Length: 368
Image 1: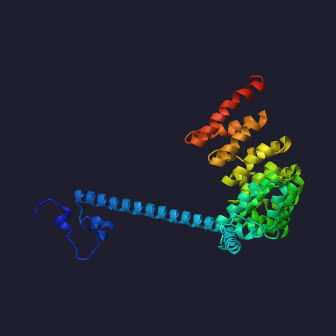
Image 2: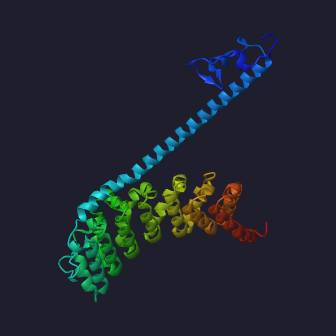
Image 3: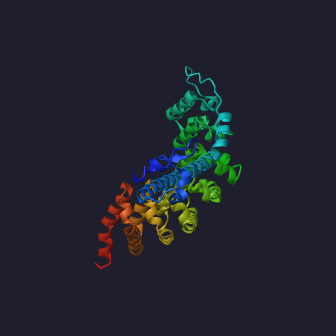
């Protein structure tokens, strides 16, 4: 076979169990010239070797992506566990305070069995109907008084919370004091636990809506003890929004001072953004100005807020309420991020709001 062309097949026999790639033993990659010096074969080996290295690189990239995905899943699981922690006690309270009980739907009377009926799915509807149908405040008060001693349990009951909300919405504020007293009886930690409760948070919102500032002052004082946690909590954030909308003015000022120093934490969380939006709308002008500066002092925070649902509402409120100087600072930050913002529906909404307000601010500056 003298003079015959050298090919991979003619000089590289297949080996029994030796690992191969395209019929070329992997061991040959280290020094293919040791076996053959033909340029065609060397090029072939170099090509196969490159394919092998490319495959290894792709596998490494895939394994890296899998590892990153697993890490993200672990982080999500940890976040879910953190959110479920306050619900562990809720479920226990719910089952303890809401046992199954015969509602006796054929008997429309609720007198003497309000608490029993309030814990039942059908029974709680009977009690709510009775409160709506009552002909006087005295009748409603008589129904509500049967819940005395059970207000906190009712607030955390799947069915009972609806009865308590109906009492709050249909009765005179001065008659609701026993509900506030029982919820706050255990101190700040107990009040905040109700605020973090899936059903309890609703009752606190109704109290803030319908009771006087003096009545809820102690309750809000308890909530301010845990303002950091409540403002970003899945349920507590709704209570804090109501504090800003209906709470006493001096306590709203305290929240503004807190938010000024924790703007980055609040603005980086969707639920915190919703609370900030309420602060922009309901805090006093002086407190708002300090809060606006706190947001602007965090580079990129305003643009990041504009990228989520609650943050978009907060940013648009910011732009509509801030003074001209702060507006142009915000304008500069948002325009830097405009390429990213214009790629999303929420971002485009913020940019449209910004454009619509700019002309007015320019006019106030004398067209400068």
